[in-house]
Length: 513
Image 1 (cartoon, one colour):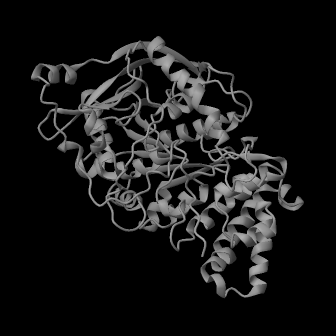
Image 2: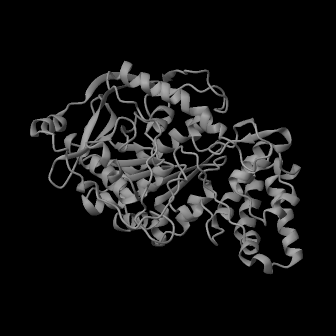
Image 3: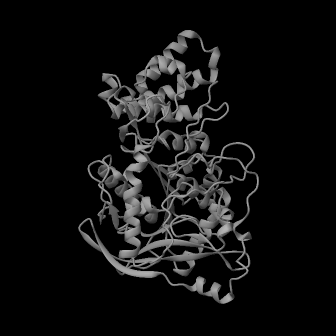
């Protein structure tokens, strides 16, 4: 059997270079202060007040006044001393609202190694990057920020968290950065930030939500269990955007064929966008997706499982069906032994036109500079966003929020090696999410997935949800919404509007019920 990695080496919100097994992790609480640090220095760092500015944004025709706080909070070790400083930007509505009734949402992106800039300036905050058209055309550098009429601030306060080594967040001792890396260390660190922020800002009585994107979904599922088991901090809801819970759904390794099954409907959606499907499927998107899912869960899964024992007639039928659903040639599918990775698909779909399609957003296309390569040289949907988001955040923090720091603001950074704390199997926070739901039956989950996402396909996380070990009655706590664009679905204006509407409806109903 040919095994092809679904994940690649590109680092943006989700990365493959981190996928390595390590049996041991150091706890963030095991780090210590530098010997030259004085008690006075420590006290000053712990009590540094955030920089506060006031602003307003028009949402649904109403002015929402808010207070923005930009600063850092310490991650405390067992001795009570800071081991790291975590940068955050918080927005609190200043209209007269009882804190006990006002929800607060803690937001983060993924990577690992990503700051929270994407959800912050792409979707949820009071300002957003101005993207032209449907989000597939590169803005002219350096780009600009505009008022975000789809901000969530009319229904919830917002706190954007940059994990250690991202944004302005740094360990107290630079050589101890790796102590904050890894599945369990990352969850423990972000949980400690949430605990301390909730305590300092007197928000224990507030309804509390987490919102994560990409690897941030993996983190949020783990946090839901850690927060309630470690601090008895029970959440009201999780907003999971374009993410992954079980890495087995997106990485083909060894004998697992699960990713090929989970990716198929997303490949069909991408082919549909580029008008590469047969006429009947091209005319009816729902029919195309339904046919892809039926085949993936049935004859395709069987064909992959049986392998060389598959009768020739059934094999030919499977090859023909894959060609119909992906727009690829039957000869190519035969060569790949019925297994086409998302990376190879991105190269092959528009190869005759000399073009490649994006990983994070399959709607985005670019010219391919190396026709002989089996995979694209780069991800056009990655480079579409990185420059303008970087310029926007660096100017916004210093010029509008008045937070001055000479360190580079790390939009994306390497955090390797990333220990998973396991010796076998795939990383997963599915059991954590299941435990959180069983122990807190009031916890609600909103899943947002986009059809042209070839990094975290919709059927990947839906497969994980179907496998959760929870009672049938708790499945009603999980709501799924689908969108047309890619990983950063909010770059497409109709999806941005729908996403905001769905999240606000979810928060309101969760708090009321």
